[in-house]
Image (cartoon, rainbow, N blue to C red; front, side, top):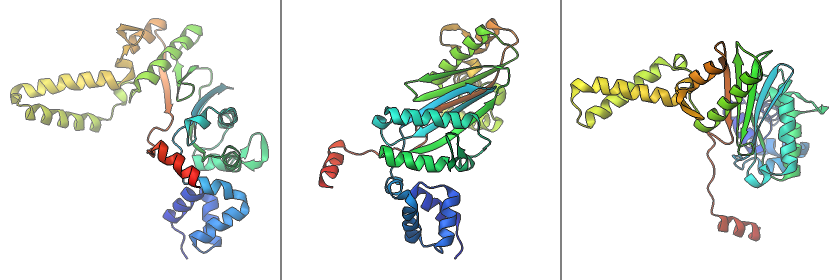
Length: 299
């Protein structure tokens, strides 16, 4: 039987196992989903398989800087309670240490790497063991590594790890530049800009927004001869909100972020920005707490 990508995806969702493992087991069981799950349970993934269908949308973000590199990771849990568990916190910190030395460029490759604290196991096996130990579905969701070299770099964690930011600055060094990078990282955590500068904004995005705003103005009954001017003004206002360098600097709104960085060092330039927010983009399951307690009592 031909093994399709959708079959592999379904098995992964139901077991929490890696994609390659899912494909191998499906081949071994000739595409029989129930037999594949049974086989995975027999291979020691039973506890993890029971929990892997649950939504993991809480968790923590962690950053690390070492040896000319900066890494940021997000690891999800089902509940905020577990996200504060010392064992889970230690696990996330070790995932960050794994990331700083990874050679992987995809999460699948990352999960297949040997664990840095025990080379006899891969990362996905360690995750499975953590699921069994902690008792909730966990998911190493994503990572990003920057090769910063000798560039100035700063990180910022907000809300005990709910948001993490890494900012790399090139062209200038020193404590003042690192402090500026950290201040800008704090601003990024708060404002979540879509772009660093206007040069990064996709022309198609501007065209689409211009069309929407034009139609809005016309529907508001504005005269056609002033709509174009109005729309240009609204686009400029929008760019000041979504472009980091155009935003008013939060500690002194008389200057932009670009002006603030230039005031620290005229040669300083933002090279890279990474912002992870725990659970962003994951659809969280809303459930009545009383009903959940009742379910647990019944069974």
